Length: 387
Ligand SMILES: Cc1ncc(COP(=O)(O)O)c(C=O)c1O
Image 1: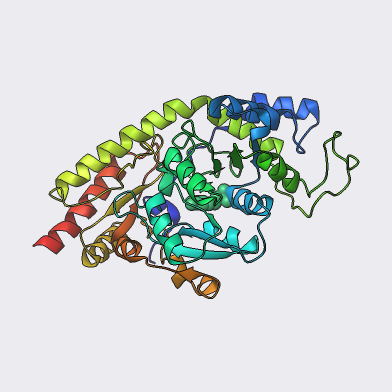
Image 2: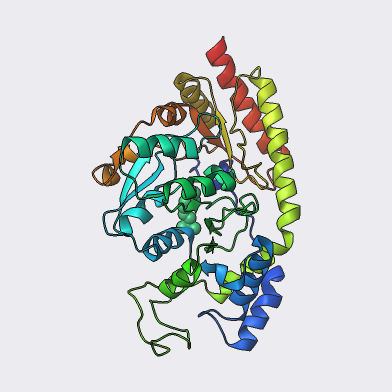
C-alpha cells in the first residue's frame, strides 16, 4: 500500500511564529478578569498606546482593525472620494490590495513596479498620472520592503492626490520617516508582528484614523463632543474591530519582535549567501530602495534568470517535497474575477518579474535537514539548466 502524502512530509513554505499558550496566559487572564473581549477594550487600548509611541503619533492618529484588507477598504471609504474613483496600484501585489479598492466602490488602475525594488515608486506614479486620470495612489511596501515616505509626501503635495501605503507585511520596517502619510499594516499569523488576524492604520491625515475607527465599529458615534448622540449611526460602517484575544497575541508578539526580527534577518542572509554560491551569483533578490531596509523578512523570494530555470526549480522542489509558491501571480489583470474591473497601464517589469520569481520556504525554526534539502534541490535545478 502506498504511503499517503501528508503536509508533514513536506518542507512547509511558512510556519507562523506565534506566541505559545503559556506566554499568552497573563494577557488572557487580564482579559477574562476584566470581562472585556472586544469593543476597544483594555488590551486593544494598550496595544494602540504601544503603537502610538513607536510611530510617534497621538492616540487619535492610529487605530487597530480586524485585518489589513478591511483597514484598506475603510481608509478608502474614510477618504470620501466619489464612487468610481480611479486608484493607482501595482499590478504585482496581493489580491487584497485590489479587492479592497473594488469593495470600496472604486476602480483599480494597475501600473508597473521598479525592476529592483519590485515596488510602485513616485516616479512610476507620476508617469501613470501623465497618461491617465488618477484620483488616489495605493503603493505597496512589497514583501515588507519600506516605501520612501518623504518622496510620497512630496508626491502628495505636488499632485494633491491622497496616498495610502499598503504596508501589510511591513511592520517594523515601514515607518512614517518624519513625513506625513497613511500606512496600513497586517498582523496576520504569517506577518512580522503576528496576532493571528489583525490590522493597524496609522495616519497623519487629520481625522482619518478616527473615521476608520468609527467605520470599524458599524459607523456608530462614540464621541460625546459630536453633534450626534453617542450610539447614533453616523455613517454606514462595518464591523472591523480587533478583538481583545487578538490584541493579547499582538502584545505578546510585540515583546519578542526585536529578537525575532534579528533571527529573521540572520536566517535570510545565510540562505541568500548559500543559494548565491550554488547558483554562481546568478540569482537576484529584492533590493532596498530609498525608504530603507527590510527589518523583519517573512518570505524568501528568489528571482531566477529565466522562466525555464523557474520551471526546473519548481520541479526539483516538488520531487524533494519542498513547498514553493509563485507569490502574487498571476498579475492582477490576469485574474478572471478582477480582469473586468481593472484598468491596466504599462506593466512590463511586473510581467518579467512574474515569470521569474519563486517563493522558497522561510520560517524561524527551519532545521538543518530542511535547509540542506532546499539547497540540494536548488543545486539540482541549477545544474539541469546550466549543464
Ligand atoms: C500586500 C498585501 N496587502 C494586504 C494583505 C491582506 O492582509 P490581511 O490578511 O491582514 O487582510 C496582504 C496579506 O498578505 C498583503 O500581502
